[in-house]
Amino acid sequence: MKEDENVLVFLDVNPVNPGHLLIIPKVHIESVFDLPDEQYKNIFEAAKALSTPLQNAMQSRKVGIAVEGFGVSHAHVHLVPLHNPNELNPERATHMDEETLATIAEKIKTEIAKVEKAEIK
Image (cartoon, rainbow, N blue to C red; front, side, top):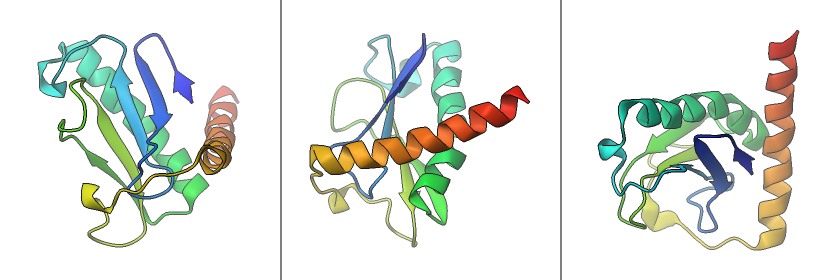
């Protein structure tokens, strides 16, 4: 969905809430806390940059962030649109079909483009 030289961002196929993003470094390291400082910074800068477009696209009240590392043995951060307290619970995750994921991805990309366009002005 979004990529640069340092990180890859994509929708979780088993989201806690629609729009749930995963941000991963391109280098394979198991734990986010074992990342070199620059790569650690890149992940959290991406999370910060995506939080407003994600919130706008999903019309959520907040955006939550989680680092837990149990699902896969590759460092990653969860960025989750939140509408109510206590939603940032991985036990709430459910599978989402490709068509729904594609629709959500387009909404988020539209909001990212708005932010990037505003930064150019």
